[in-house]
Length: 153
Image (cartoon, rainbow, N blue to C red; front, side, top):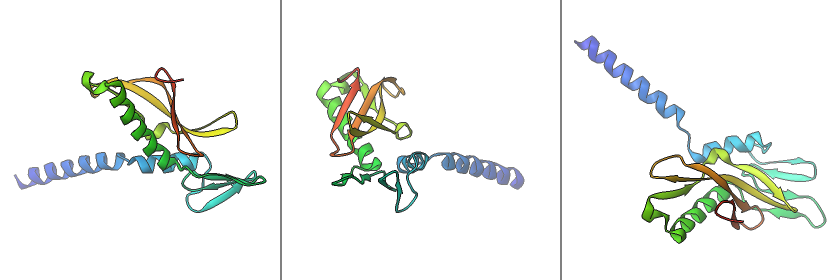
């Protein structure tokens, strides 16, 4: 009997430990993506007249230098806040609909000389993952958010 209890406890412990190891926080996911994009794990690195910092902000070494201070973490937070505001504005809560983004979808995007953090925008009902409806862009210059796709221009 003791042996059965021991193995039951051991299996439960191993399964729960494996599940907890697979879960990563949004911050860890964004850090991994920044490394994929060529940002350093700590400090800064200079590549092609650009200083790239570990948080995803950067400075273009031109005359005068142009700083883009919005980090990837700030952009994720601002995008989530913006979507909460839009959900209330559109009244989606009444119908059990939601707008959301995922940390693993972060991308770098530039358009007309402006730099953005881009996240895929999902629209779903209840607890569903939802369908891709466009992108939310966060300006790396000032943190301004805009939607590109079904919900915006």
